[in-house]
Amino acid sequence: MRVRRTGAATSARAIAVGAAAVLLLAGCSDDPTPEAGGTPSPSAPAGSSSAPIPTPSTPSLTPLPTPSKPWPTPKVIGTPDADAPLASRIRFAIAKQVQVAAGRAASTKVTCPGIDDAEKPGSHTLTCTVNYAGKTFTGQLTVEAKQYSATYKFTSQSVAIVKPKVVDAVQRAASGAAKVTCTMDDVTVVKHTAQGIACDVTTVENAVQPYRAQISGNGQVLVAKA
Image: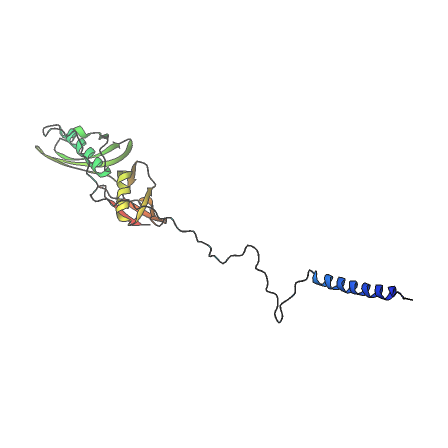
């Protein structure tokens, strides 16, 4: 008679299956297994980079050309004849003096009350009004008249000047200028005893430097840093 050992066999198989399940679960664990004798290396933070950060560069400007010739003397027309009345010759002389000092030939009117009597021998001191290109200022005229000759001199605390002449002078004085800006009208009347005209010079390195343009009585422009 053969005896069946179903209970023992079934129990043994159950134990084997259970052990296999434990091993399978252990193999599917989500925890990382550290290497033997070491520690896990930290992960690099997202977005980090070792590349250098570029710095903004200052734009370089183009330098203005340095004038190679002096400011041109304007050509004044309308010279009266040598035998013209003294008053006409004096008015023209004053108009020419004003235009040369300003740096440009332009419409100029000179009015001197009493000038028609300046031919009489003796000393004459007159006040004259000058209108140059729409700008007006006054001055003093002194006439020393003799029987057949006369000398005269016109002086004024003010002088007319055109903007391009001032800008030209500043450009000559400021090395490395890329731009010159002067606070004045195209035609300006200034007192030559004043502080002068304010100008700003922008260099090729894009830096702004202040300058002053002093105008003399004969229209000479003297430039210095402010």
